[in-house]
Amino acid sequence: MKKARRNNLKDDLKAEYDLTKLKLVGRGKYAEKYKAGTNLILLAPDVVKYFPDPDSVNSALRALIGIAQAHGRTAH
Image 1: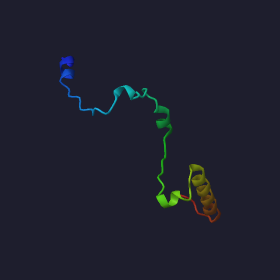
Image 2: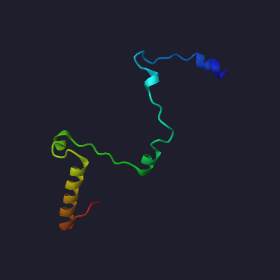
Image 3: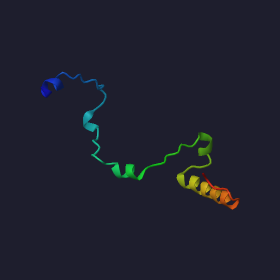
Image 4: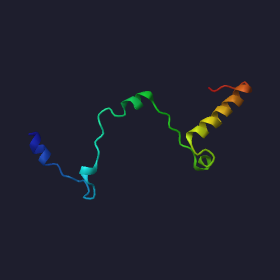
């Protein structure tokens, strides 16, 4: 019964896609990263001009945190 059902499926993949070149992702390949969690933040284009990499963003935010703490302000 399953074979009959599979044979009736229509292949709607476009001809320009070569299945032999597609890589299969191993099961659980990204499980550890998912467990650790991510916090991706997208910067606006005008901000990206001033912060070209993650280290520059983190450095600026740490400086801002230091200023806020010096003025007795804390994050909520």
